[in-house]
Each structure stands twice: as structure tokens, then as C-alpha cells.
Image (cartoon, rainbow, N blue to C red; front, top):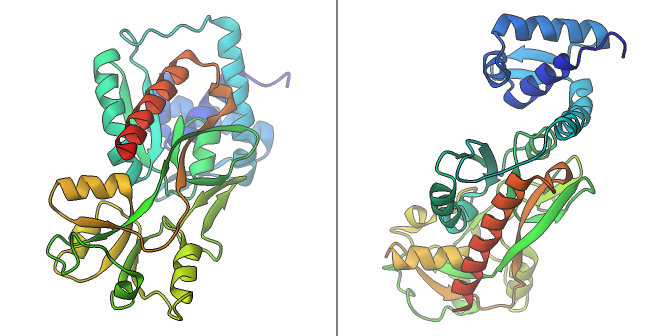
Length: 321
């Protein structure tokens, strides 16, 4: 420790978040050569390569991944010790990063971004895909402020809040023979099904560093049980990861898709699809926001979480109506 310059930790943290020496230097106002020199000193001190240059950026070693959350926590504590936290939306130029599915980006973020543009016109928001395999690492190192999605389990170092609960419906093309009518289970036995999944796993979950995300964006068990009750098996023909692609994929076909009601209503209002209620019982699926505990008392972070919660209440009210 006596040989450790705390500025080296700032460099490590920046490279971990940006995965790029040039961008890391811009974040902490250092030249690329200064960043490289600092990394060299850290590698010597820790006897570990820490980052390996690849075609896609600076990939962290196992040691770097283990260090990253602790370094981020330490830097946050130092910042709090030396500066009084103040946050004024009207004056901030803070950059927020949210990870979200295309579904939640469509139904929640429009309300949030409108409020940000009014309350904090100098702030910026970056939206990353919530399906990325290193999502938990990105939250741990501070690259992602808040993740929106459906989570089965959350580790103790992260905090979660249920935004709203989404029920599923069936979606078909607007010119489908069954569009606008009640679709019975027997009808579905003659139709091919389209579902959304962000990964192929045996249990329908993607797990990383203690955070388990739902890979399948529908209740497979309820679907199979419903078909089993009439001695049939669901004919799932298309599995793909994007909700917003569904109307285009349904166009000109007699397929049916399983989609959250909130999104189905948007498609129907736009005239690109028509929805019907599910002909089986299926539990509503909660949509969460998740963040690292180090941000729980950050005024700017609290402000952003309240905007998300307010937007979610608006979505829930529309669903209830």
C-alpha cells in the first residue's frame, strides 16, 4: 500500500468502465500515454496483466474483475468524504446510463426522457441493451447506473424495486383471420407461435455474478400446461430476442406471438397488430429496476429512480384502465 498512488485506481476504474485507453483518458483528463503508463505501474505492483488488448477493446483479467467493484466502492467513498453531495437537475451535466430491454425502453423510457429534457436539459442518458452477458459486471463497476428488466434473483450488493407487473396477451397481424376475436386454445393448436427469448438456457434464466435474469420473455410452463390439458404440444416456430420486431415478423403470416399487454396495446393503436387475451391462466411478470447499493443515497441517482418509478406508475395506470 505504501507504493500505491490513488490516482492509479482512478485510471484502473476508468479503463474498466470504458474498456478503451483513449476514452478512459478523456473521462479522467489524462493523455493515452499517461493512462498506459499508469496501467504499467499497476501491473507491476499487482503482478497481473489486469487488461488484455483485443479486437473489441481492453478485456479485464479475472483479477481485474474481482478488484473492480471494490475499487469503485472505495473511490465513491473517497469522493463522498471530500465533497458534499449536491444535485440540482436544472444545472447538472451528469451522464446517466440505463440498461433496458427494447420492451421497457418503449413503454417506460419515453416518459423518463421527456422529464429529463424538462428538468435536467444539460444531462444526458445512454441506453444499453439489458441482454448483454456482462450486465452485472457493468453495474458492479459503475458503467450502468440502473438496469430495467425481469430478474429472478438479486445479490445482496444490489438493490431492486418492482416497477409494475406485466400480463401477457396474444398478438397477431391486423389482417389475421382471428384478429379482433377471441382466440381459443383449440385455435392456437393450428397456429405457429412466436416468442421472445434473449438466451438459450435450460431453466430460462441468465445468471452472472449472483444476478439472474429471465431469458424467456413468456411463461413457458403455463403455456405447456395449457396445451397439455388438451393433449397437445405448443408449436413454437420462431424464437427471437426483439419485441419491437414482432409486428414485422407477424406481417403476412398466420402466426401468433406472446407479448406484454402494454406493448401489444401500442402495436394495436399503431395499426400494426391486433391482440387477444390468453386462453389460459398465466401469472403477471414483474418488471424491476436494479442498481448497486453504493448509489442508494446518491441524490442524482435517487432523482433518476423517482423518474423511473413515476413513469412506471403511469404505465400501470394505463394497464388498469
